[in-house]
Image (spheres, rainbow, N blue to C red):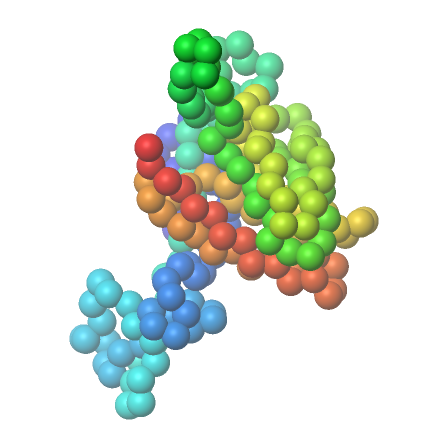
Length: 189
């Protein structure tokens, strides 16, 4: 059993298999990596090769300090600044959210975000097929993301990055027939 450091921390998810890595090179589709025996496992992961007799997979769980509520006037806002000079010489500062949702499916997706400290999830609207949506600044600190197609919805997916310059892969389903792979990328800078 893994304990939290103190009561100000919360778990954001249950234990999940780490699916990161390149399929066919580092891991298989279920996150397994392989070696000939247990003594030869190293930090680098690799896919199955003939003669391998051992496999393992990583399990992860994310924790964070409890976020402030949406009504807290002292809560930090996450911003991205873009500065440039207009043709007339005036300075232009564009402030946006650091979180963008890209829809690479052939479906229109309705998006929702939430956080453990919020009273309810917030519907952000639709992202049309091959479109994108910038999460509004006031909701950029969301910890969970969920998509709907019609009346069916996915389970909440974790938005919190595991670290700078880290990509995470999630698999989810909507209803019985729609299977979605979500790539979450955190870029430092």
